[in-house]
Length: 154
Image (cartoon, rainbow, N blue to C red):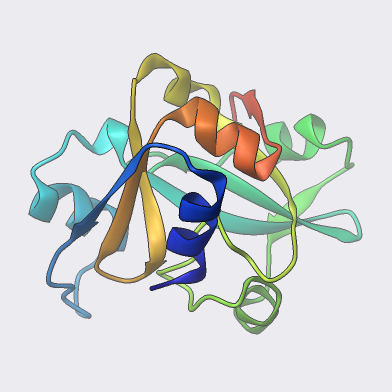
C-alpha cells in the first residue's frame, strides 16, 4: 500500500484503485496509463513538481497537455517557474518520478489542479508508483491537497 492510498483511506473518501502492467520503455507514462486503462486522456492527470520562486509547487494536469509555467507562477504568486530537479522531487515527495502522486507526499507542497478537472465526476491520478492510478473526485483531491483549480495548461 502506497502513502497515496493510505492518505485516501485515512480521509475516508470514495476512491478506487486501478493497476496496469507498466512498460518502462513507454514514451509517456500518463498516456500509457490512459491507454492501458481504456480511458479518455483528458480524465487522466499527471503530477509535476515545479520550482516557483524559492518553493516547490505541485501541478496536476491532464496527461496529454503541457504545463504553462508562466500561468503556474502567476497562480502561486511567483515571478517565474521551472521544472524541479528530479532528485529534489524524489527526496521531497517520497515518490519516484513517473509515480509521483499528489496524495501522501512526505512534505505537503502547495498544489494547483488544472481547472479542466472540474468538468469530471472523477479523475485518475498516480497512486504512488508506476502502473497504479487512483480514481477520485477532483473536489476530494483538492480538499486533501488544499489545492486550487486554475488553468495551467498551454
